[in-house]
Image (tube, rainbow, N blue to C red; front, top):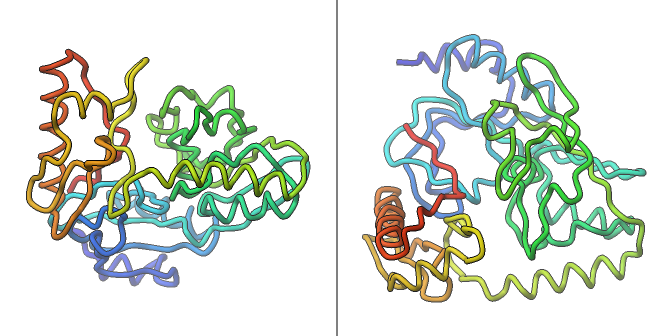
Length: 296
């Protein structure tokens, strides 16, 4: 068992933290148990101090942004959480640089004020820049890889600048999902335009997102297979409205699982497995989750 009192009293004691930390009160799906402690570093130095400390002590940890596409397990997570949400500086020059904790809305607000266009597809996505770079987030056929110049990461004890060509991007995939890199920030190549044009483009993407289901969810649960949407496959398997406990497959968009009241992570996982089995049985297609799991 981790001696949390000792850990919290040592090198990391001055960093803002919460212990214990409730998953269900903080993630967008509203499910999950608790973590022993969550930390909220105020700058990169504090973030790296935490990472090095937990690695040295052998403490399991997870770095998180907005927890919008995350399903934590029920019960107690004995490790630590590190949130980037206080790392929220944006710098505008020839390129646009944002720290990992900057939310998409704040990033676009800065772009709009300075007449920087091309990132409007992020409008309405409840992500941080770090999460978007990690997942190669996208909408409307555009993805982070289309605008990224480079990512600033911490890996193997060093801060590195990783050019886009070395990020290993593909559909909802990146090298960072495999190599243990911690994203600190990113630089983007955006076009020079005017604030009104950025505002209009944002409004179009926001309008398109109004068709998505309301309620507590993780966004789309599954990646789209080639040439067909996961939602169409799930709908074709007759699964809309299927409910397990407090979790239900949306009637509006079958690739959304909603917490309609008191859902547990086990309820959501049961639905995920039912969907995968039903779609494979009917179509021979193995759906792959785009959500991320936090297991105890």
